[in-house]
Image (tube, rainbow, N blue to C red):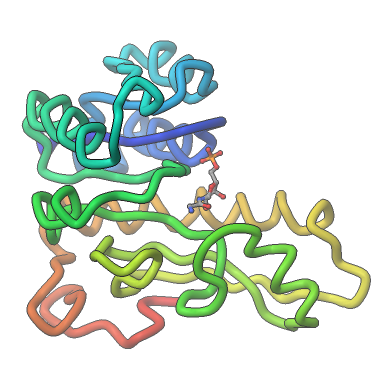
Amino acid sequence: ARRVVVLISGNGSNLQALIDAQSYGELGGEIVAVISNKADAYGLQRARDAGIDAVVLPHIEYDSREAFDGALIKVIERHEPDLIVLAGFMRILTPMFVHRFHGRLLNIHPSLLPDYQGLNTHARALADGCTEHGVSVHFVTEELDGGPVVMQAVLKLCEGDTEESIIDRIHAREHLIYPIAVRWFLEGRLQLGPKGPVLDGMPLPPQGMR
Ligand code: GAR
């Protein structure tokens, strides 16, 4: 089976969606390890409950980003993954890390990229009076939240929407699309080509599949 390592920092609801997909035979591979930079991440418990190796690598124990990422690379490579999945992993990765796993590193980001890179995406989209918001799965490149988009799910915003009123709908969309993108990759249908992501031999548009 194709091997997946998932990196988390927190609740791990996206990790749970991937675990659930795996249990239904719909992931196209096996999650062989979950790594968290935070010891209290609830996602670690989700991993253990599913019988998955759960590793804590506290970034605070390292002097620099380079040192942390070097240690992270070692832990990841021990598990010989085909794919590394960032699922609420709230650390900026060094170019060294990103290059090491080029073409096999996916992230999910809570906006319709390239809009609202970075943090507090929902608050900013609402403050701007957007009518459309959503989530993106993308390949990770050196540019923070700037890598090529594989898939997006759109959320219509209505007047009076708040962060609280949209957060469940946002998460539902994440949990829907992330397992699909991971499966495409693991089944060999999705690659990062020299000009961008390719699905079933066809270049994806800038917004990815919607
Ligand atoms: C998700 O909404 C994900 O899009 C976001 O963190 C949340 C993690 O939730 N990721 C980022 O903001 C990346 N910069 P989860 O731990 O329940 O999966």
